[in-house]
Structure formats: C-alpha cells, structure tokens
Image 1 (cartoon, rainbow, N blue to C red):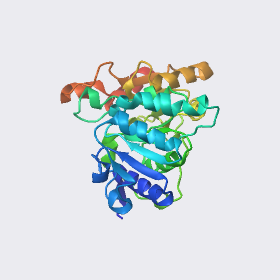
Image 2 (image 1 turned 60 degrees about the vertical axis):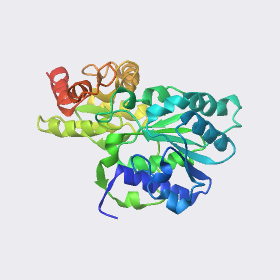
Image 3 (image 1 turned 90 degrees about the horizontal axis):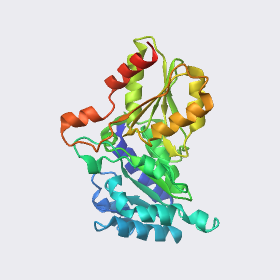
Length: 328
C-alpha cells in the first residue's frame, strides 16, 4: 500500500476488516457487489461472496426494511445508500422501526445496523443530491449520528459503528472520497476504533473554530490564514452529531472566549445553531464576542456552478467574517 490513502480506500479497508472479523456482518445496497458508485465496496464481493455483499433493486424502502429485520434477528447489516438523500425513501424504517425499538421494547430489542453513504454538499449535483441530513437524523433519540473528516475518523468510527449494538447513521461526504491522507500506523492497525467524540485538530488560544465533516477542511485552512494575522485558532473536528461532544467545545471556548462554527447545512435548525445555543447557555458571560454561525444560504442548492459557489462557506468568506466581526 502507498504512503497515502483516499477516504474511499480507507472505508473499503474498514469494511473488509469487519467482514473478516465477524461473519454476521454483511453489506447491502444498490451496486455494492460491483464496487458501488464511489468504489467503497470495490472487490469485496470477490472476497466474501454474494451472500454477504448483496446487490439490490432500486428500492430503498424494501432493502432497508429487510436489513432492519435481519438486525432484529442478530445479523449486522451495513446499509449502503448511493446517496443519503435516497434514505428519505426509507426514513419510516430508520426512525420508527430502527431508532425507537430499543426504547419501545423496554431494552429488549437491540438492532446493530449501520446506515452509510455520501451526505451533503457535492459539486454540480443540484438540490436533491446535496441535502445534508445530519440535523434530521441528529434530532432523533435512538440513533447515533457520525460525520467524519479525517482518514482516522472514517476508519475508526466506521469500525466502531459496525460493532455498536444499536443503529448508527454514518454520514460521509462525496467530496472527501478522493481526498488523500497519510497512511499511518494507526490506520494500519486492525484493532483501531475511534470513539464518537470531537477531535482537536489544532490547538490555539484566540478563537475556536468548529467544523462538521467537509467544513473541517475550511477551518484548518482558515487557521493557517489567521496565523499570518497573529491570531491563534483552535480547530475542533466535531466527528459526532449525536451524541454531541459539547464538553469539548465548552472547554475550548472557555480558553479562547470566541467561537465560529462552519456548517454546510442551512443555518436554521442547524448543528451550528445547536452548538451556539449550548455555548450561550453555559458561557454567555465568558464570550468576548457573539458566537458566529457561518452556514449555507437558505435555498435549495443551485445546479449552476456560479450560484453554487455563492451558496456555501469558503475559506475566504470565513476568514473575512472573522476579521470583520470578531477582531475589529
């Protein structure tokens, strides 16, 4: 294996390791036996066979319901959605059948299942394929919801999700699939698991930047731009939407006394809004300036490239807003 690895390749490796480790694990979805639209399941059918890498018709409602039934029976399905937007076809199963069953059965009916696929922003695919479902699923008790950024996040959290006794929604980002990361000893470790907690990517003293999935990359780029202005930024990779690691954010803001959340979702009812509310409730008197939420415009994603560029946060927009509103 090379010194670098893409996110699609590290997801493939994580799935392969878990399929080898536990014969109750299987993958189901459209085109998964052919490698999938983004090659995340590449070559897995050749290794594990069609009984464990199961191609389905275009019927999310059907194969999701089947998978939840299999999970009730003790198997561990990984449900592959070609895009998480298509999971809306099966949302009744995910929320009413999967998420609520443990509570409604008095703790008797666990279902170990992962719902995974590309979520949120991608270039040039229009409104119906760029809907970010982190808030929708994150609001539901009974689900764990993960939105990874780094290669370690993707591998460690996916393996952790597959082993979790209860349902996990695993929100990948299509743009990140081709991003390359160093192939570290941690990634080579078959036993590496990552907790569903926030990760501090950069330490700093002057401002806290919180990113969700793809927006972590913007936060890291902005932190480098701020260095040239002698501003030290702490960058938090949120990783988990539910449970939300509020304590990590609060501890950072207690130190920096300033907070910016960069979120590719719409601002109204966003992850950014939830974090902002939590910080204002706990640290209102500590803050030196108002919490800033930098999010997408409140419209469906335009297909036209020039309009799409206007809709979403960029490192330039975030950098300029920080300078104008927080350090003037």
